Image (cartoon, rainbow, N blue to C red; front, side, top):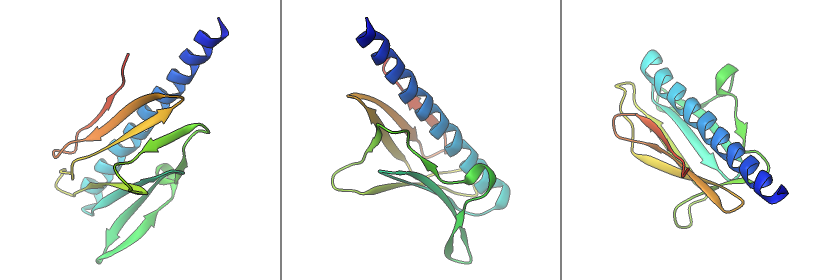
Length: 126
């Protein structure tokens, strides 16, 4: 019994974390449009952080809704190949570089993807 409940709880935690991450990505895309600056979200093993481009330089966006976020203990991003980080980049035009990251927790995975039009989707196996 406990195993099923624990597994369900773990899945809920993972999906909630993916949904929160996706919402923050949407917010980053909106920020790029509103400020007419490129906004980047960098993901690594520890969490994710925001930055924007200003006069050709990357500057941390780290106040309010853009504070860096740590993954919940037990959640890890699955990055392609030997990458140590992945970046989601949002353009002021509303477009984006296509990117996806899978979040893993106790053998379960949920994918968060951004397409070229800047649309963010969460693909969670039910």
